[in-house]
Length: 447
Ligand SMILES: NC(=O)c1ccc[n+]([C@@H]2O[C@H](COP(=O)([O-])OP(=O)(O)OC[C@H]3O[C@@H](n4cnc5c(N)ncnc54)[C@H](O)[C@@H]3O)[C@@H](O)[C@H]2O)c1
Image 1 (spheres, rainbow, N blue to C red):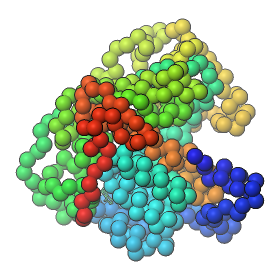
Image 2: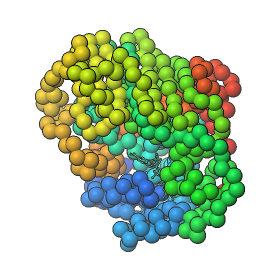
Image 3: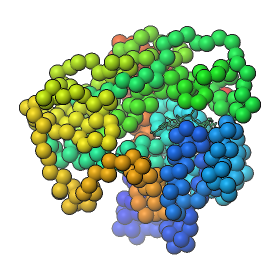
Image 4: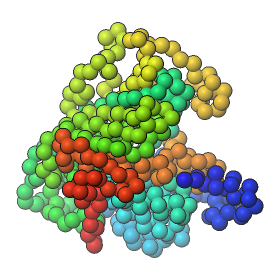
């Protein structure tokens, strides 16, 4: 695979004029990046504000199927055009837009992003990149074919502590890593029965558009919108898809992992409605330069996670952070709390100091941890806008984030087969276990 910067470099070596959209045109004309935002309630509102805080971003359109969220966001950007159907917005005003920000529930990420990319728009899409593995692959392919700027919404990827942990692991501070344990006691699962009956659809919500490509079903208050959809198999990806993408991002990046060989999820039996409220997922990955021959990754979520384990013992009997990851290496362990805390190096059950000056000298890290969400949250978004302007390079483009998402989604699918080891063939994009393959894709409803 070749990224844009390398492609440009190689092309100039051979004297070939690269056939690429001319991002620098934005620079030379001092033009702004005109953005359209799909989903502006919940996280979408934060995304909107973080993008708008870049002085070269211009918010031109807002879209939400919930009129209350749309009106709220519209008050902040009175010049923006308002829409409730992203298809109408993209069709009607695509020539007024350079980039699209997708902050809807997971099942709408791919349909909206793919339509935007088909129209040659750069895309910032929230995590997990998609609801299905096939969609993640399609998004990556399309972004590459069209050479678009892309970024997945894992903003902590650009935070000091996460960058430091990545650099420490890559520097070999704990030697080759053979295992990562990660945990999150949140519960974005639902073990109860599917609710029956229906509630009146609120007059501010377009339920048909909210359902989008997913199958038709009656509206139930407080079950789907807002936010609760992430517990349900038709719309979200459970706790692993929600928090796992953030917490697994640093190990994935630092260890240069690709997709796994095998996946096993110990959880309750599937009920086809809600995700299990507790999951214990074990992945085995092919080895890389930074790992032993294989790498085992263990994820635990739900109430009281993680279970006590010697790998997770801290010096001085310290309490584990509520959420985080522990890298287990030949020479020690590295604890990375989630989030806004320094990683901690542990050798022979004692904390050890480490020197960050060489990363600072190399220009890979700023000297001082920011440790202020308000001050760091915009970095990832600004990187996207700057990349659209030809002045930076996104660090979580779809070429990276589609593989991370695929990995996460394989663990979600393994939850359909509790306790069974599934074998993933990345080249064929299929499981050896035929019965699991139907969960890689879904049929889109016409709406
Ligand atoms: N990166 C992070 O830290 C972070 C944090 C929270 C959520 N998220 C992600 O952000 C996304 C949204 O999550 P949320 O918690 O804000 O959900 P939410 O349900 O609270 O908000 C989603 C918004 O999208 C709107 N929407 C739904 N379908 C739409 C459609 N077809 N077209 C336009 N608008 C539509 C809803 O009306 C609502 O305003 C998810 O992918 C989630 O994983 C990321």
